Image (tube, rainbow, N blue to C red; front, side, top):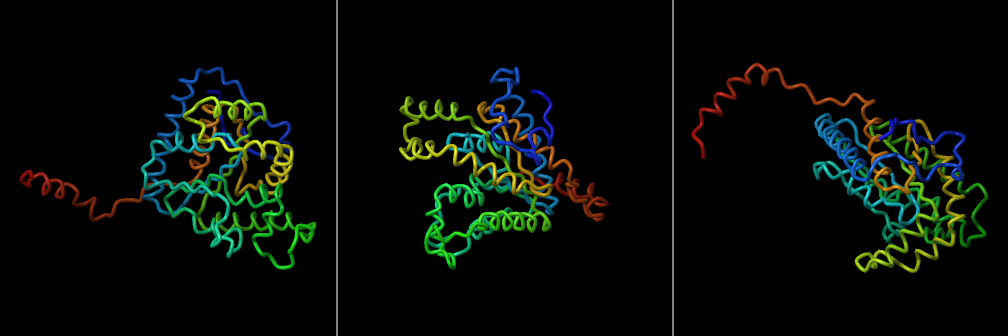
Length: 294
């Protein structure tokens, strides 16, 4: 796999979603890419064990992308070697009645990672500045003050939400949560192929919904609002990465490698063993070894 650093796909001030690559030719076979991912994923799982013992940082990973971008399979493959206690995945669907009784960030607050653990948001708080912009009528379900219809939404409303999200993420980082955000950048043609595969393969028919085509018709709107949301919330403390997603195996590797490279910048070490334990470690061994088996 070609060298990948934390800056390879990092979103910068000049980010243009129309120019961002959706595919990169790695020159590797599918099996080679799987082997590369396996190595990085195992290194990540070892680092998470240290994080758990260190107990100072949590990691929040936000995954966004158009339908069929490969979020579910990426989560499955990247975290395959993790201790199950070390990673929790949250898939955010339409807000429930209970969630709508709170502000739009509430359900994300309560899903944040504990120290020493990973939380993966499969879709995230960014849905509130993406789907809600494409379908502004959804905003009315929040019962916001002074907004009784779509025409009541003030012109600066979405910029206000971007600022709220930036403040939310800054607060998390300042309190020990490492925030990394990934946009799986899928081409419209590749999405067409993946939707067709869902229809062609009987075992995958359940994944298809007629709403997939309805949302696909709104592709340009989604691209526009992704551009605005990512550009407005790409910060040094909570960076965005635009990952070419037409090649699923390569995308999984890129995400895993970027996570690993970011975490290796932090001072994450196992805690030092208590002096008393170190001084008496040989006696502890003798005591245990002298016990009769069984």
